[in-house]
Length: 217
Image (tube, rainbow, N blue to C red; front, side, top):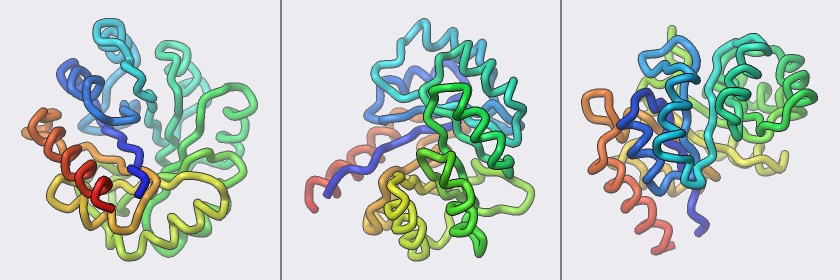
């Protein structure tokens, strides 16, 4: 079994960044939208300068942004990828793609229309991320959806030639259930936090469970 890519999202302070940048994660994310984990590109730049990128893909997360907002963050941080996490028009993603070289991730909330939305955004998206649908929130809720239904998302993404990350409520305690459906990637924030801050013990526990499961399959 191939190990899924790991993304630690919602890094909102220096300690979060220090731990994530030294972890086994492949990608680390920063939220530049209304959220309890919101941060500013200028802050992230300071952490990057102090600790380095350590080979991690840096992903900026936006919700219904303007093109200018996204491009400014990309300029400051030289982001590797941009995650559109709202209900952005396809035209915005296509315009960004024409003007910039960053990988485009499109987050889609689990639900009846999710497969249709994947098809709609397919021309512009490089990566899909399926998150839980919680009323009044775009993400970061710590709530998982029924992963037995995630296979259809993974299959459709594979047919489109794109990886599919699963997000929402993933933690060391339940990651084995998610690994059984073989996602291309796993995205989590609160599952490796204690009191709202990334926790080294939880990070290491999560990674050990992932690596042990993959090596045994």
